[in-house]
Image (cartoon, rainbow, N blue to C red; front, side):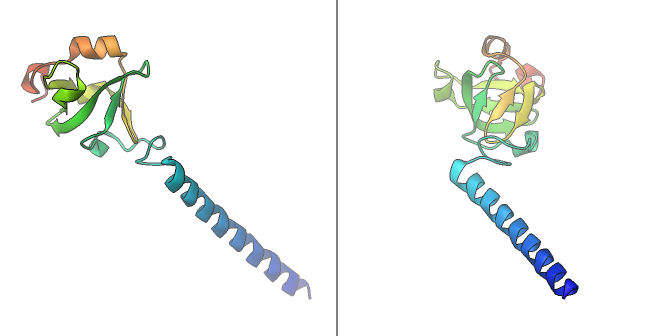
Length: 123
């Protein structure tokens, strides 16, 4: 009888763990939270994708990713407010999840953005 109770407890524990994992996945899906989502694990510079918002360390959005060129992030020209593409070195990236988070505040980032990947020493 003791083995039967032990087996039942082990089986219940497995079901609880499976349900917790399922619930966590559901929350990530519904909220956009989690790795590669709005907030979550850092996926690194390799995780930078077109159309991601670029957020300065102060929380202000400074642009939207057009694409990565070498070691520079090219921002879309319509996201920068002046109709021009701007480039930021990937060395400014603090982390990447659902957004690109910079290690510079918005004033510093905009002061340091360049007109080409080569101009910022990243081409």
